[in-house]
Every structure is written in structure tokens, then in C-alpha cells.
Image (cartoon, rainbow over all chains, first blue to last red; front, side, top):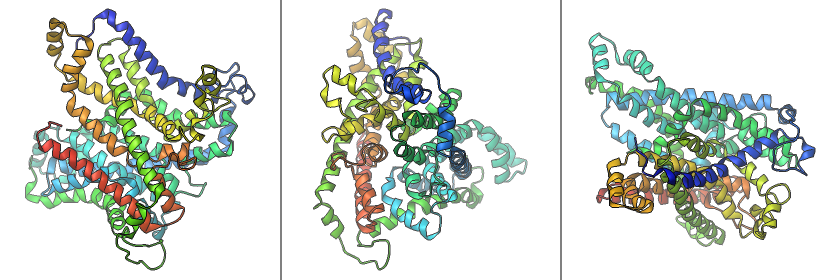
Length: 278
Length: 291
């Protein structure tokens, strides 16, 4: 670790600058939170500050107005479906690329790397027409397949870089005992990889929960829409009811905030791992 | 490592699912798009080959040229403002032990939030009546007294600001990781020589984190190409195309006018531009730039 490269008395102006930026990052979110528990009538006089009277009723109001029982279910379905499907294919591929080294594996790695950098706008329209042809528009399974494909390259590389560090002796020993490749995968590689499974699952889940472009394009039936696009139409529907709007937004933030508090390091290392790969 | 290399076809079974799903969703539609950009297809009926007509038409369209210009501006803004702020904050953070985790979490949290939520927050804050409009007016910044999202001169910058606000914490964490890998003896030696804080940053930190720094510039350039959410939600490309970007332009042609050939031409240009950028960085690495 780095020993401080600043003298102690210099640390105070440093803190001052850093606090300014931390406030810039956090205060807007705090305002959103205040507004979500503020009575509607208070917005005129006190648009930014903490509420003088806490009104938790905003949440049930928004929940009912936006039919959030259904919407939460839609988003959860998308998140869990995508996490499971994406993890399944990525774990298999990551294991193979890390430990089995199939001939031509570099071709696959390059294909997936190019796949990461293709802008979605290149393929979204043909994909839309294909999904129309297959009757997958306005279905959750259709979107789950898309989200799995979008996140699979990232997850595969993350899993590969973890599994490559698992000691080969374990696998060789299992092989000597007569285990086949599938048994080695399920009995040895998977149980040893739970940390990376958790990290990848959290990152995929976050990406799906927040995703906007594909949700907007592939789900137009309000009954099937997830949180992101519902919140978008909610903002237009209740344009001036900021109490309701903010409560709806906080309902979308809350699960992320809770998970972030529990798994900060995993989120940060997982999300930045793409930027740090050599 | 090759403990099963004698049965390498089994290794392929493990890779097939990911390749299949990726080809199905991204690979094949991409290839279709690269082919359809030479046609005038509208999504229904006959497909006519028209050569490069779509591209000729594109470069005749002043709204498309405007959108490209805005994407270039967007790239330049993101290559400077968030990068400088993130470098500074990361550098200051290396000198702090107490409370460092708090700062890191605070900076990073907006990066976790959905674009819809971030846009809602800033739409409210920039609202002329409820938000900071009155405050800006009272301190004499008339430009922000009305919502910058609905003003022609500011709409693009306002959308970029919100996107940047959500993004810069990500850069802080990346730079910080790089800065912690710098050998501490270098700083100690510099202290003995009496180097200032800025000199240490300029002559030790910056050269030592160069690989990560250059990489961050590359992903900023690449990520500035498909920018969509923040523009679509905050301004819709308006008012009067003042914040139109290429992705939004494509979206309108693809899903409002169902101009498949034309939209594919836009997508094709975006794709080749990204490949070109990745190629340049790859070439620089080959030439021994250590990036």
C-alpha cells in the first residue's frame, strides 16, 4: 500500500476539494430522497430541502398509480432470467477457455472482444425484425435472451480470468480419479468459483435492472414493461406531481442502494474490471 | 493446463452455447445490417440493391452532419472534463487514509443508477421554478434560470453534464487502482529532491499510470459513439435538433420511419468508426507505446 505522499497539513485542503465533489455526487440523490417523502403541498415553498413532515404515503400512492406489483414482477423476472441464462452459458465458456483450451479458442476470444465493442445501433433494427418474425416482441423471454447475449462476453472473460487461477493439480487429480469433464466442471470448478459467480451475477443483474434502450424498443405493451421504461412514462404521466415521481424513482434505486451497501467491493471491482484488463 | 487436450471436442461443447446465443442476437443481425445498408428496404416487401446511395444521401443530410458534429463535441467534452476531475480526485485520494472509502463510495454511487433516474433528478434540479433556477438567477447566471434542456444553446451540454456526472466516479476508481500500483519509493525519492505536489503528479504518477490512462481515453471515445439514453430522455435530440446525436438520429429513422436501409447505413458507419478507433489503439500498442 501507498504510504501517504502528502504531508499531513496538506491533507486538509485535499479533504475540502474532495468533500465538494462528494457533495456534488450525493446531494442530487439526497434531494430525490427528500422529495420522495415530502407532501405534495410542500413543494412550492420547499423544493430542495428536507421535508418538514415525513409523508411515507407517497410510496403506496406511486405503487398503486404505477401498478408496481406487476412492474416489480416484470423487472425481477427479467433480472433473474437473464442472470441465470447468462451465467449458465458464461460459466461453461469461461471454464473451457480457462482450463480446457480448445483449439481455436483465441478466435472465440477475439469474436467476443469485437462483440463487446459493436455499438448496439448496428444490430438493433435487424434484431427487432427478427424478433418480430419469431413473435418474441413484447415477451420477457425475448428480452432475457438479448440481455444474456449482451452481457455474456463480459461475464465469460470475468469468469475465465478467475478460473485460470484455480490450481491445475485439483483438476488433474480429479481426472486421475476417473471424473469426466462435466463432473470436473460441476464438482470442482463451480464450487470453487462462487465468488466470481456472485460478482458476475450482481453486475449482470444491475445492468438488466437499469437497461433502457432494448427495454424501450422490444417491449411496448405497458403490461410487460420493466421499471426503467415505466418510470420514463411515469415522468410524463405525472409531470408535475414530483412527490409521486420521486417515490417511484426511489423504488427503483432502493434495491440497488441496499445491494451496493452489502457488496460495494464486488460491484466496484466487477464494474471496473473491464477497464483494467491488460 | 491441457489436461483434456486429447478430447478437445468436449472443450468445444462448453463454448457452443455462448457462441450460439451471441451470434443469434448480435453476430447475425450485425452482418444483416452491414448487408442491408446497401438496400432501400423498408422492413416489408422487396429488397432493392441501391449501392452507396444511402451513404450519399446521409452526407447530404444536414441533420446527420449536425448529429456527427454533436458526437464529436460530446467526445471532446468527455475526454477533458471528467478525465481531469477524476485524475485530480484520484490523486488527492491517494494521500488520504481516513475516510477514503467514504469518498470512493460517494463518487461511485451515481454510476450504479439507471439513466432514467439520473435524468429525472437533473430535470428536477434544473427546473426553472422548483429546482435551482431561482438560485442561479439570484447569483446572476441567467443562462440557467430557465431549464438548460429546453434552450437551444445549452441542451447538448446539459445532457452531457448529466451523463458526465454519472460517469466520472467510474474513472476515479480506475485511476485510483492504477495509482496504487506506483512504487512508493519514487515518491520518497522525489520528496528528498524537494518536488512539489504537482511535479510528483506530472513526473511520477501520470507516466506510471499511462497504460490505464490511455485505455480510459479509448473507452471514452468508443462509448461516446452510441450515446443515446441521456439525450433521448432529457431532450429527445431537441429543441430544433440542437442536441441531436447519431444514435438518436438512427433511432428515429429505424423505429419511427422504418427506413431499414438508411438506418443500417448509419449503424454501419458507427461500427466502422469504432473498429477504426480500436485498430488505432491496437496499432499504437504494436508500435511499442506500452498501452
